[in-house]
Image 1 (cartoon, rainbow, N blue to C red):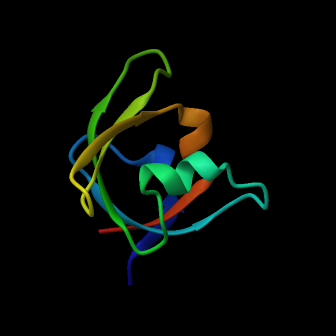
Image 2: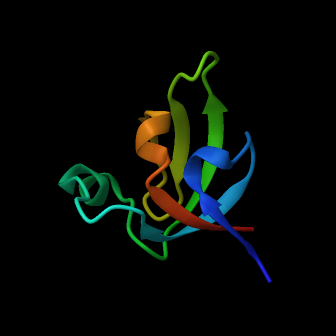
Length: 79
């Protein structure tokens, strides 16, 4: 069984698969950036003092930085 949580809980180097969103009002930018259910992501860097999280979207090999508040609404299945 895998660990289901939100994206903001991952540590640097950890990987997960996006499974859903914890909000009915999903910003279109999430989909445009590649945050689609079933997509694998890896945490590359976490800025100090609750700064942004830098993620590698493995489907298109893109590095994306998002706020922790945005990462909280992305539900994942941690590997």
